[in-house]
Amino acid sequence: MSTNRLPARPIDVDAIPPTGHIVRIETGPDERAAIAKSYGLVAVNAFVADLEAQREANRNVAVEGRIRAEIVQECVVSLAPVTQAIDETFRVRFIPADERKPAPEPKPGAEVHVDPDDESPDVLPDRMLDLGAVALEHFALAIDPYPRAPGAELPAGADGIGEAKRESPFAVLAKIARNDN
Image 1 (cartoon, rainbow, N blue to C red):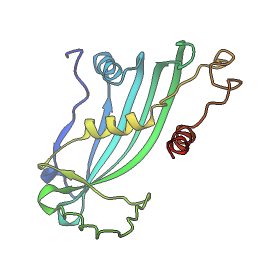
Image 2: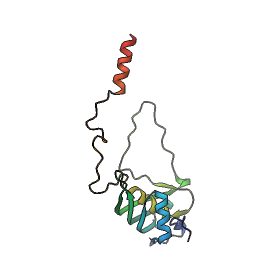
Image 3: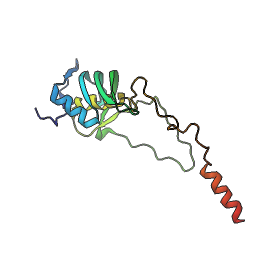
């Protein structure tokens, strides 16, 4: 297996049996090295994903899964290695591209409402679905973007506390506007 290979697990969604399709992704050293490189991690010590794809009405597909991983990143303060355990569950739905309905055109001046709990389905460009890519997407969302080693602290003054308070750009613009009059 190539060291640049991410865990791809493509399935034909039309071949999913009525009882569902279960896939377990257990990565080997080459795949874990590729994941680490792809996501800028020091190491991926473990990566296991258990996924189940189910066909729904209207040719839709639902994927439920659980990802367990152990990763090593650099501390954002000290650059020391920081280990993070990931244990995430998810559910995502897919609809065929030809059944995607365009979003309604917003009316000028109308309020736009965004529902944070909206589970809008993803679009399947064809009838193949890469469960490895689905697992990696949810893995990436679980990575701590600012890992910090225990006891790691910024040097005094590095966080801006204690510095002279800077004037806001708007206050500067207001002074300029007053001087122009």
